[in-house]
Length: 387
Ligand SMILES: *[C@@H]1O[C@H](CO)[C@@H](O)[C@H](O)[C@H]1NC(C)=O
Ligand SMILES: *[C@@H]1O[C@H](CO)[C@@H](O)[C@H](O)[C@H]1NC(C)=O
Ligand SMILES: *[C@@H]1O[C@H](CO)[C@@H](O)[C@H](O)[C@H]1NC(C)=O
Ligand SMILES: *[C@@H]1O[C@H](CO)[C@@H](O)[C@H](O)[C@H]1NC(C)=O
Image 1 (tube, rainbow, N blue to C red):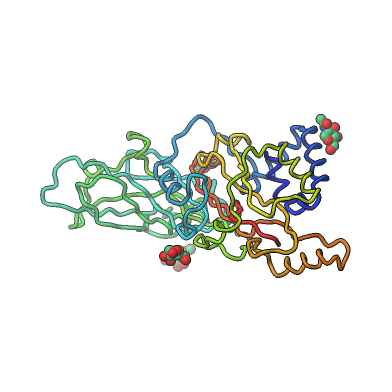
Image 2 (tube, protein in one colour):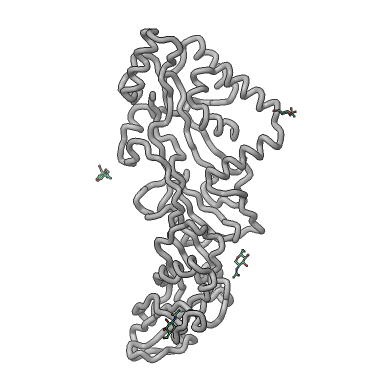
């Protein structure tokens, strides 16, 4: 399956134009299933997912509910992006607090964020617990988040800088989100700046409230599902050249070439089909299933979702005359005419290739066991056409 993914990616046209050579190639790789070939192929696939090595995961960790919910909002069950305009960037990273302090101080290790990654938004997520004690005279409290500064370094008398401040109902419980983008940007510029965040709660009159009364869950003494968390929305700058339209509304894809998968597409039946193509009874260009199974590849340890996805592939012939359902380019139409007229030797029929591609989403553990949601462009063939 894996070798098939790669050969489809690189030899889409060749496989239809020269089936017998492709057959020999398949046989060769089948006979020579050395570990080297397999690991080289998997390494190349990792590069497609923007990684050098598969993250090493120790034990089974529970991903934050926030990240699971975000994934389910952005992606369908196969990981295909539901709404391409929902996320501003292409990456969302979550970090748990490393300090696990009883004081309301938090520290996050951002060593897994690439220098080139653009920080769009950073949020501190805190779980507010039921207050202890009574606050008969107060209904709201003012919660302020500060960035801790190194006063010796900045030549500044201030030890902290206000990032975000909000009124919160005293008796509320649940997640509270504070924007801390400025602080994270300064940490990204100089790791030494990362001294953490500090939270102060005051009455509306401005006097500080004891944090034993107004409480936020800490990593030390509360359930894992309530741990303080930093969430970064970033863009890693990986963008691929767009095909014509990526409008998910464009339904031409589902109406014309998207046909039901053939039953029992084993490699053997594919081969015999290739032979019949040589005899000139090939099927027209159409989209066929191509399931990429992460478990089969050995990645199920670090990928949370999806378990795999249907990348689809384009298969079939593009003979003269090309109907509009073949979604031909003008160039392909002319090429098929030249081929039919046999005006010039060696001009093949046009290629059956993806003409619309969709992105998929991966929810996974990184090297530091933080949960990351990443979007990858152009991973699923949405429709096929003769080009
Ligand atoms: C695999 O192919 C290489 C050359 O591409 C060859 O040197 C090697 O002996 C083959 N391995 C096996 C197990 O056939
Ligand atoms: C952050 O994490 C990395 C990788 O786990 C580690 O090498 C580094 O020492 C950590 N930094 C701090 C300040 O703890
Ligand atoms: C340090 O403070 C002095 C006096 O306030 C000021 O002139 C100087 O520019 C400051 N240096 C830096 C690096 O901020
Ligand atoms: C998608 O289609 C719906 C229903 O036809 C329409 O309301 C919506 O504006 C369309 N969105 C885009 C981006 O074209």
